[in-house]
Image 1 (cartoon, rainbow, N blue to C red):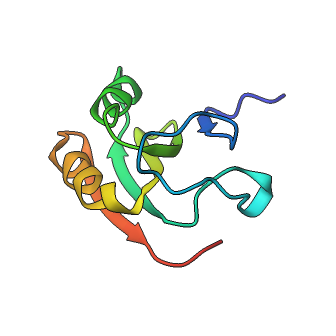
Image 2: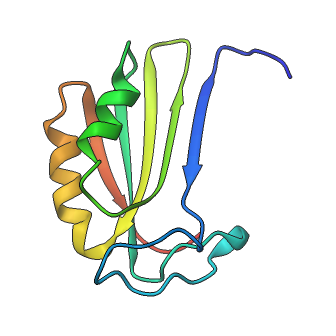
Length: 112
């Protein structure tokens, strides 16, 4: 493994993990991951700094996060990709926008 200065954390939620009440039944998505058909994907560009990943995780703790990916570069930029239940998407987007480090939040439409 070569250290190119990029930090990557990816934590997909698998189908056998217990879901919250009211969640649609998990289905196998692209790549064999257990992500429900009723989901929304958000991408946030942020300023990378000490503790940003922890703040993102604690901010999204009360929502039905199905997948969280955090990628930072040596230039102080970070990209956060979050897949959540469709009903939580607006709330999660608003919470990400309120974070001081956030530069931009977009909702990705369509499937991979």
